[in-house]
Image 1 (tube, rainbow, N blue to C red):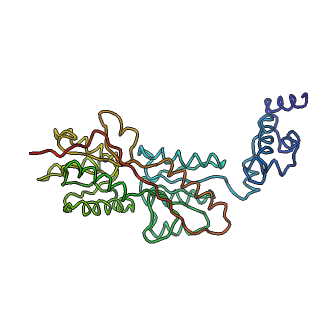
Image 2 (cartoon, rainbow, N blue to C red):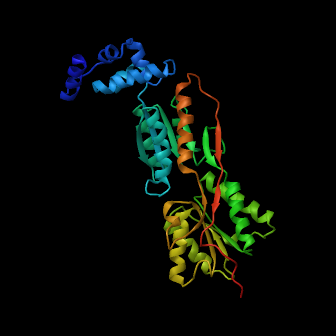
Image 3 (cartoon, rainbow, N blue to C red):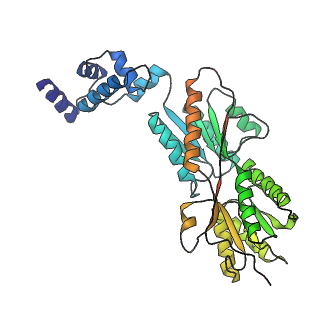
Length: 351
């Protein structure tokens, strides 16, 4: 007991505690301490708990440098975000962090603003820092310069945007399912003139949603109208400008599907300026189900994405790739989408 008390005092006073001290305290071999604290599965759970308890008592902290040298890894993951200011980004990041914490990895997070040049620069920085792997959220992934950087030995997972020309490990959502549910909901209210605000032209996800919109119109026997499809950019300003175009049409759409919730909020701003009421004058559906979508007076009907779960799934897949010595075959995981009905949709307005 006196020995333990002395060790505890040393830990509190800042005296460096070594792995030898932990092994002696737990009564196990040095290799057992190393395996237990690094999360290897060749250690009994009771032994792992005893080693962890000993490390906690002594105030032992694993040397990141030593662990990196021993395992030839940096225990750092690079994360590329298209827009850190987008309210949907933190949930993706939380899911990524959930798994990174379990794996005792740190994150280097880079914002690219959806700009190719900035993305390439950030990718080079992360690769130069020898991150163990990359999670790429809504990033450019088809350009030759990007593919050259991805062709190296660093594993990566694409999240929410994929290449139509290359096979990559990818996590996304069932856009066909989500858009179909939205159009079906509007058709049940009697809507036939349904406008769409598209996402960025170079986004595979935006294109999938556009194709799903066309399929849904056909499925519910609605005639497509090219004028009812307006280009957007996932930002409030883009939604606002698209709505102004819709409002100038005659007849204008009786319902609008927005590229995301931020675009839908832009539509709401334009409607307020024009003296139009939602859903009395037209119905509106967003996509993402960000937290503010449920706030009054927004009260937005929207298509929910499992963002945190998707981020966690992408990181879990990445960690499996990091552990494999040979390059694994690409895998895909697609999450379901769900329509969340609130107050921004209602019956079509009759003349």
